Image (cartoon, rainbow, N blue to C red; front, side, top):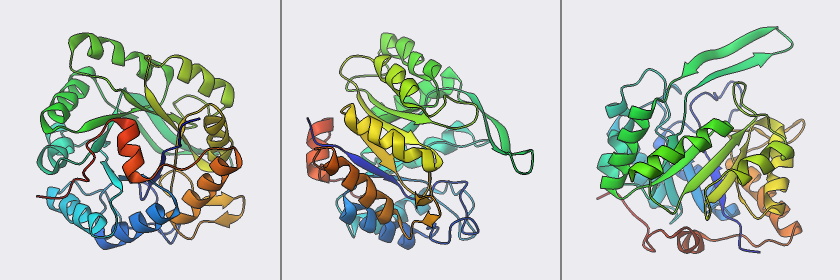
Amino acid sequence: MRKVIVTAALTGVLATREQCPTIPYAPKEIGEEAKRAADAGAAIVHIHARTPDGGPDWNVETFAEIFREVRARTDVIINFSTGAIGIPPEERIAHIRDLRPEMAALNMGSMNYAIYSEKKKAFYHDHVFANPFHDIQFFLETMKSAGVRPEMECFDAGHIGNTRPLIDMGVLDAPYQFSLIMGVLGGIPGTTRHLVDQVDSLPPGSHWQVIGIGLNQWPLVASALAMGGNVRVGLEDNFYVEEGKMAKSNGDLVEKASRLARDLGRDIATASEARALLGLDRTPRAVS
């Protein structure tokens, strides 16, 4: 079975230090977390930019500083996010156009997005995550012009289906890179049965990884590993190594994922090996 590619989602945009004290905000902190994740086995780091107080930051120079801080420490594959609510498409993609990371996340459909507290009987972060086709097409065309691989984030089965017209139009080219995000309220449930159905729905020859939310991440990681897929872990998605034991860094979560992979007979791909497996350029990109 081919080597597993582990991605670390380092910081996200919703998680705060009040929830998890080790969430990185500053570019230097994100660079240090990238190094910890890479040392533990991550070949890719998925990154959102944050302001000093933890809010979302779409300033191109902030992303450039993050790029420099990461690259100063490791040759890991850099994947910048484009996911946002209420931000104009041109602003959401400017750092991808200007900085040309190897990969960029691309949300493949609209959805209700919320967190629900059974204890308080209340919704949090209750909003519509809008990603219409004209925005998706614009992002794909910009990524293609910049030579950036789109990492298609699919929260439900319909999001996978949204690739079909884009492939037919020629704006989405193989090799296809999918992230199957499972367990977000408003999206597909995080079960092995649903994961099997998602994988069976992918275009032939697709690369894919599973992204499980919360502690449900670990059974989904195990399922994906057994199915021959890749995995994403990290503080954006889950704070806990196990119930009641909060991770001290992204490296703790990557270390557990790597250990699970080896226990199931799969070796961990280095960043260089991941580039070869995914058909990316062999040379790590840096800020020009």
